[in-house]
Amino acid sequence: MAPSIFDDFSYQDIRNVESGTDLSAADDRTLRMAALPLDEAMLDALIRFQETFLAHVGALTSAEAMAAAHAEAVRISGLAPQVVESGTALLRAFCGRRWAVAQLQARLARWATLDTPDAPELRARLQQEVAKQERATDALARRYGDTTLALLRQREAPLLDLHSRLTRLLSRG
Image 1 (cartoon, rainbow, N blue to C red):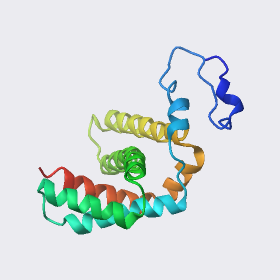
Image 2: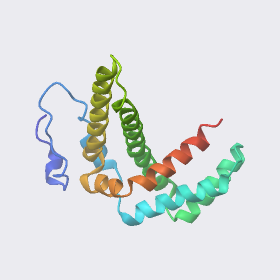
Image 3: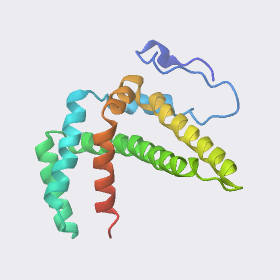
């Protein structure tokens, strides 16, 4: 891609490295500029939002109960609703990739001890998929920044736990 006018406006951390026909990252630079910067305080507030939502919604699944739990969670988090939605989209993107990697690695561990004719091929395919998901996780840095990805990786375990609990709750219906 050609040099961008944005190179002079503090977005040098988002390199224009696309030179081939694969333009899968072409929009990442623009989306990075639109993304809210994530720091420790914002991540803590987003975690507080998710935990509060889970605590208030409980076993209730009515639309009214979920709306009330969401409103209370936004209030407790101290974030604006737009910030909450932008932040939770980032958390879903990261946690979805990391959950997939964890599931693939668990399958790979189960297949490591099996000695069937098709086991080596399946292990190779699983390893390829793990590598693909790892690359996709790393690609999030283009969209959200290296420091954001590093912060999310530091808190991966509790974030994955929250992600799993929220997914179970929201996919019941």
